[in-house]
Length: 550
Image: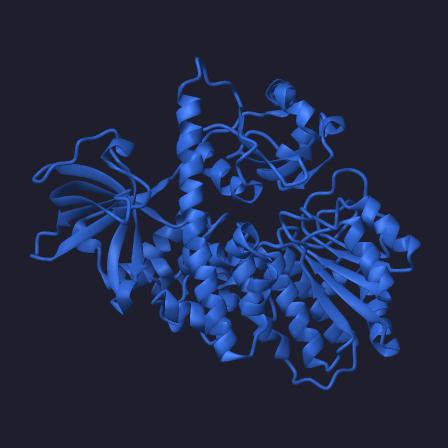
């Protein structure tokens, strides 16, 4: 196969260490049947499937309890679709209110389920650290099946079954699945063992939401995740979900051409806006409704509150940077907060600050109950969950991923938080060489064409573990430079291609100062950028996404 590859495709594969013909074929053409793993290799899968099938046979009430982000919500949607497809009605999807209930399983909700006669509770994208709520469920006669992908914090809940490839003694060949990916494996297991009157292969239609979550949750797009993301995009492009159709129409996106960038920058933020600015059940309804009018109303609502979210987030970032810049020194880890900051927005804020100051960041706010809630981000060099574990007695709870986690604590501990976290950071940090980008090769502006784009796109979808290729363009002549956007916070530079056709390059949330250069018409620059296909206003355009100007 390698002899027929475009030279740029071949080079990009070589840069990623993919040279063996069999591996090249597997990467470029994932096989849905061959390149996934048997769901029953997951620890406790057999036990979980048997319990769900028993609940179905006995018509027991089942609760599907999911997280409120663009992993948990799609996970809840695919489980909802499964139970609806098999004709089972005695179930309920439940998503906790971010501001009123907080993250994870909570005892109040569990007691509510008990009073309503629930006998089985299935979590998705949550639960691996929720020992006390699971204990309460056991007391009420509710069996709990946890499906999650987060790191355990050392105290596993005494659930009926736990399906999480990151738990100890799990022999599943791939531990990078997102929460919806784990839930999808549960559905695969149920279909494999159950006797349902559904078409063979029907579960592939669930790949639209499984793929959406896999791309949105920033898990590695390698191994089985690449299969889910690859085919998930194909199903998304054909998805019949009215809510997704309405979102695409509203944002002037061509559904049949959806890419991973559309998910990351357009769809996922609107799904996440529901929990940050309103109620997460609205995002769930967008993904599951069959009513076109409801879908249209929900899409418009999520679009509106996402705009409001962006305004609030920009205000918090601006205030945080002003305070950080006024400090006498920057320590190894930044801790900053304000009781007036909404905890729901702080993950995005922490990520922005981490990128600006190139060090781990913890940002805290205060919820309505007076508890301090924080989001932490690190680009590498420290396992945040391990770091929190060093001082677990300080927190009410904590959990998440290596480089993205959160915690809550009492207000009186805020004043010592930075010192405590820095001490912990020093004890668990490790050497990490920061790599914002690695240039794949040098191209000319004449190479910015659809043939080159097609050769690059062969490696898509791009994401963690499979970064978008980056190229160096030397001596690119500037013909125009401007700022765009409502607040003029995005940079657009136009370059002379040499054949009369310009090449447009953009950098979101950047100005000339971001690159420490004064960019003027007629100047020649060395630009590091990736190729990008834009369909803004339904007009396909090939442009550059600037990584750096050197």
